[in-house]
Amino acid sequence: MDTIKFDIYDRRKNVLVKKERVTILINGVNLVKMIRDIEFETAKGNKDLMADYGNIYIYELIEELDTYKNPTVLGCTCGVKDCSPLMVDVRETETTVLWENFKHSAKRRKPVDYSTLKFEFNKEQYYEEVNALKQVIR
Image (cartoon, rainbow, N blue to C red; front, top):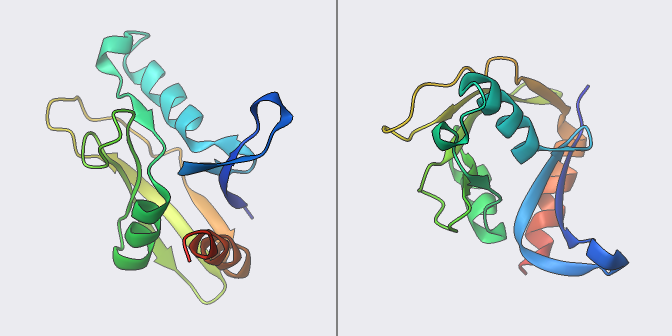
């Protein structure tokens, strides 16, 4: 079973500082890194063909996860969520939450095969993380 963590702290210089954006860690690995690794292969090393994904704002991620079956989980580093968004299909079973079928909606980019990214989270652990994130903005 995979694990997810929504990290809102900046750990540089061993100082914990709350950030406005959320780092999504899956099995301890930053989702941005996973996506960049896949896109690097697709683009055959040409960084001009890769998206510049970054973490999205806390309130945007909460709204996406609460509202949509295919939420945006990463946006552009420019800070605009709808600039090169990366979306994922979220499906629930009785005991798990599945993230699969990652896709970008940038029309100017080549399709990227993200099919190797499929995650199955324990439902209880997943919603503990989502609810902890919601507590930050209350």
